[in-house]
Length: 380
Ligand code: CAA
Image 1: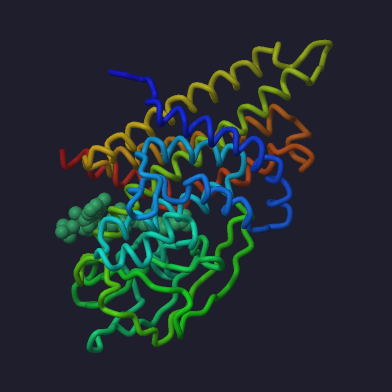
Image 2: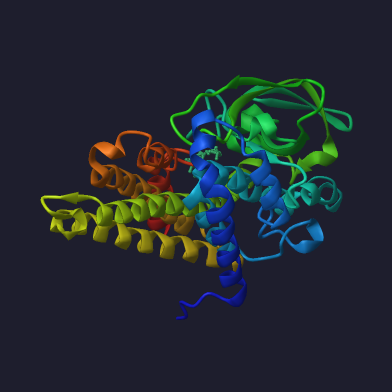
């Protein structure tokens, strides 16, 4: 067993860490305060190849592996969790399914610009009535010659307000339940597509989230990803990869909580000594550091398996479950170590606390991750 990173993995870690420290971290508080989409950072990240890390170079990506992707996601999210999720959605939820299930023509048309960061992608699965129960899609796609006509509403869509492209899930045959779901790539400028409610969120405020309304939208049949009825598997397979991205985001948030708390505990003096001298604080720090390492090992294992094209649904869910709950525990302890200063926005501990929560919810709640893990265990 080798724990060393490859030269390429070390290189992206150094590049992402340096970029995050110099460019992202100084802006994180302002982005959060103003719920401002970090357009300039996304442009810089595109130049660095971060918007399509595991996409082959011939399709506009950086041609690296998924471990590189997890490493870069952690570094960016350590500085700003909002910037992290924008990157994660583009990489795992938009580029990956087009790479895997799109025709050559569709890859040239949509993947090349997305992976090179010229356009931004979003993932239209969730609906007002279809969250954890992703199979209960109500958005319909009705075949009309060489087109499908799409009607419906998607909500809580990360990146929607800025997105140029949407990987969209629809019902083409209601009688077949999840086997009647079909996926498409859709240009967000097409007639009949409009943005709905722009959500005001607890955290990851610099990433934009809104609903998307589809009214009589004509989508060419060539924009279908896979065959009619393949959509649910496209979605689940995509989320197997997406959960690696969110796990890495959660590790980044946990690290931010930990590193800030460690540094504060060395400076803050009470009862005549730095508070890091107290065992109560040391135990909290030791627990967080241990959990972060464990979460990272789970995440890199899932990414390693994805690189080897091994089925990694259970491993991705384990990584996402453990990393997101680690982020939440680390954020709670981070605020606690800061005491009253953790509760005000002069310090970033409260932002980490607000940002951490979503990692236990999106791309499948912790309860859904436990279902996926248990189903795999029972199947043997
Ligand atoms: N890969 C390939 N196929 C899969 C699969 C996978 N990972 N998981 C399931 N399938 C297949 C099954 O084999 C089964 O196939 P057959 O019908 O041929 O036997 C089929 O899909 C149905 O599987 P299930 O019976 O397990 O399906 P289910 O209806 O019970 O749902 C679920 C399973 C795990 C609960 C799933 O609905 C799920 O993951 N829900 C959570 C949805 C989610 O994560 N949403 C996130 C939205 S995106 C987002 O959050 C983005 C963002 O903002 C950042």
